[in-house]
Image (cartoon, rainbow, N blue to C red):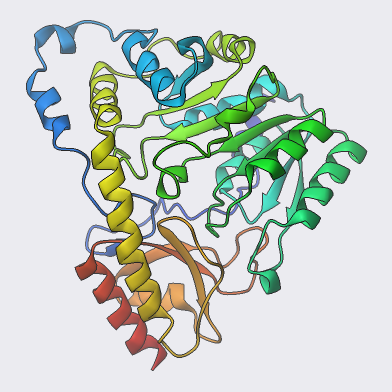
Length: 366
């Protein structure tokens, strides 16, 4: 059976990713995904206990009124400035479909979250890649910002993806840098802040501050990372009312179940739990990095601000060597901008798991 012309892009050349679809990892120790090392707030269970027959029987609220009100309260915006998705992944997939025509161009800083490139490729569009430098610890400096602006203006780019903090490197852009991109290009700019809580659980440094009437900015957030709700699949976007109204017209009406809405509301209400999670993650990350730096031949790519660490060994194939020991890390050996350099990405787990990983790496690198 052949797909139609539009869907044929979905089965074309795959973008390099760290998702593994053909192997059973039940017996593996996993450090490959970006989940929090700590559990979500126990208040989630209080909410689940209140679940009743109508919650299961009736359709969920298609407008997510209560949840949007809470998100708006947190970010000091209007509820009409919030759109939602089954994870921010759903919104990422929707953006090129709504904003790009076949053959249009998007731009991303490389390396980056593979889903940006994947969603653009599905539309049979081109991607302009702005490469950060390994020798500069993949910093997003003023030279990179100048390249973004120049390439966007000279190359007819319509959509710019900014991952802040970056995934996989964990480096940050400043709000001033994002503002320059917004002010000096006519592109639609998406700022993905999926990992931002690990840097600022107060939300004060979010790019939401830059919306201020701009209709070409969408800021994405996720509950899959610091909030610990990857299995619930809930994310949201914040933008100008006119921008969000456009996205809401194309959002599926029941893309968030009653369970996901109630659980999401429970975690968003417990801000103290989020702050404790971020603090504990920072502490154990520092301990883990300190240990990793003592392992001969290990190179950490950048000063990560998140719960992820990008690293390699000077001559070992860490992904393969760990895989043989039933330890799974995210494979970035062939990721865009990192090809052939042997990089893997790990996430910060609890102390016992981190200690286990360090021991395995010491054995491999000895």
